[in-house]
Length: 290
Image (cartoon, rainbow, N blue to C red; front, side, top):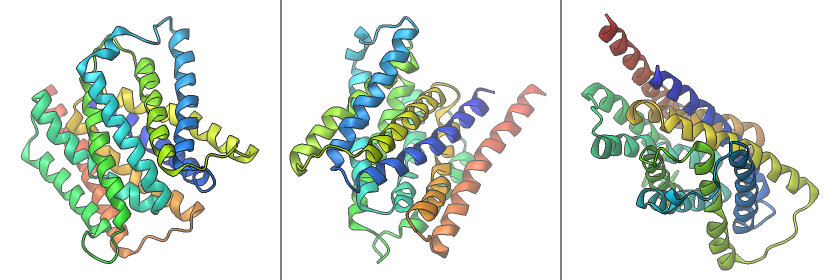
């Protein structure tokens, strides 16, 4: 049941993250990437601070100085900054497709760092899903965007963040982890803004889009944190693949992106591999109960 619950929260998180990406991509058409990250980070951090204090918890807990949380912060900064650049400069569906390599990295990390048992069928399903990703990005061919390297780097960053979330001290709540996760966007934005410059005061419409991104982003972040703290990492993470489906829909509706036949085939393979993983997990659970 923990695996089913974790998988459900992962799907919700991916849907919410895609909506967040949509609003941020729209904002970054007018605002510098760094400024967008700073405002987004401040807004999300403040929301999680209020939620943390309402639960009677300390906003700044001594556990944030542990090696795991520090590593999580570095991975979060890398993933968020590089993915923001990727969705700003490349198609949303393309950046999201590359991000689907994350489950393979996280599943391997779950085996190495948490001693989880990953059978050959589950490895095969994840590997097939990764093959679907390769069909979409087509490395070395004309369809591959050079700027997609930022999406590849963000994949490693997010995988490290998720593994660190799994290993985070139990004393830290999901709300507290949310505070630290959004806080790290502020220095990431400052780094980007120092490089690009050009900060401007947002228009009312941009403020509304930022508010929507923050609200949805807080929900997505909470869903993801809950997901990674229940069940097995290797079972839950394949459901990250659903983000690709959501991204294709949003990309087509709002950014006039039109995936080709190869992209659609790769997407179908990715979704099928994720569904197989959870269905096999349910079958094994029933056999154990019997």
